[in-house]
Amino acid sequence: MKTFKIGLMGCGMIASYGHLPAIMETDGLTIHALYDPNEQSLQHEARRYSVPHAYSDLDAFFASGIDAVVICSPAPSHLQNFIDVAAHNLPILCEKPLAMDAEEGQTMIQIMEDQDLMVAVGFCYRFSPCALKIKELIQQDAIGDVRSMRLIYNWDCHGKYYKPDPLNQPDFWIEDPRRRGRMDEGGPMVDCGTHQIDLARWWTQSNVSRFQSHAAWVDDYEAPDHVWVHMDHDNSAHTMVEMSYSFGHTTKDRISHFLYEIIGTKGMIRYDRNFSHFELRNEHGTYQLEYHEEKNFHGMYEAFYEALSTGELGNLCSVEDALEVTRIARTATTNLIENRHGLSVV
Ligand SMILES: NC(=O)c1ccc[n+]([C@@H]2O[C@H](COP(=O)([O-])OP(=O)(O)OC[C@H]3O[C@@H](n4cnc5c(N)ncnc54)[C@H](O)[C@@H]3O)[C@@H](O)[C@H]2O)c1
Image (tube, rainbow, N blue to C red; front, side, top):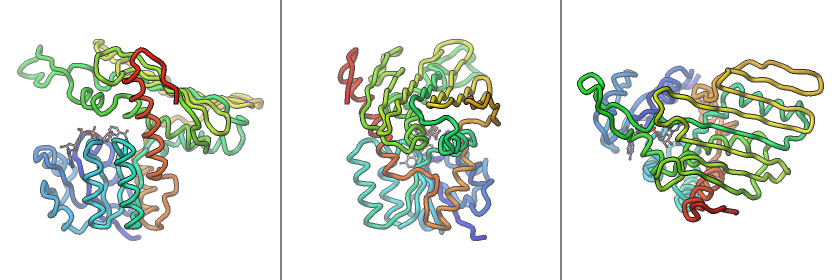
């Protein structure tokens, strides 16, 4: 079995809890080198996962002998990281959202085509055994034609406040920079909602022909922190995606709400994370299905190994699909900001 040496750019939260452990547990992949301009984050992850090479210097990172690169930096850095990796002709797995806007996306597509680069986007929800099962059930006609989907994720995005030094200053709270960072990058629909928009298109294999968005500003960031997008698909299905970053964001006890409901002409599928519940109902009865979490980084890396070996993306998200998903989420959000308190129709 060939082994691919992976280099990872951006040693933050998602690299630490998602990518690095998943790369390490995937046969055929080894984590060879890290890059991060922040020396503290870099050394922390290098030590934590015993990564042999760690650089805050780009040339040294690319000279370390890596076969492919995973981009886990914040979204505004993705384009520059992409350009740097492409200059070394290496395959890429990039975190979502791929690009900040359509112009950046077109630049990426141009580079990818000119250099015949393999690029996949890290939509890890696709690899949850439940998401894969939903796709299979729809393909097997277990619920007939999909007509309506409700995809909901309401949470606090780590909460509005946190204690930077709980040991020495137990009563000192500041605004959590992670939540502000996500809001500054576009808010819940652009950040988390892209997963749900991607699933809706991928499950139904149907493009979105038009969409409308609505929002509430629970906090006063520029972007709305509670957003609804209603999408009509080419195949006549309708999807409602609801995303909030202000669901209990100042409450003492945390709460979240995560739901998929897929309603077809002959039945329905229901996935409710709050109750670890996953079921199919149709004319034959009600079937309790095996529950799994909504994300699966390991499954995504098994698919990345296959893609590196065969050149085929398989279930990995293509750049074209990722850009369409980002376009929907970002246009919906931008329209809402421009027409605050109004209705946007595209
Ligand atoms: N798939 C998911 O479910 C999921 C969840 C959370 C975040 N994300 C995405 O992952 C990406 C990173 O999010 P995060 O929460 O880990 O962010 P983070 O802020 O915790 O970490 C980002 C890291 O990137 C580093 N960095 C900054 N500029 C860089 C550059 N130019 N090149 C390389 N590294 C750079 C920072 O120093 C930091 O260590 C974002 O695109 C975010 O949307 C995905």
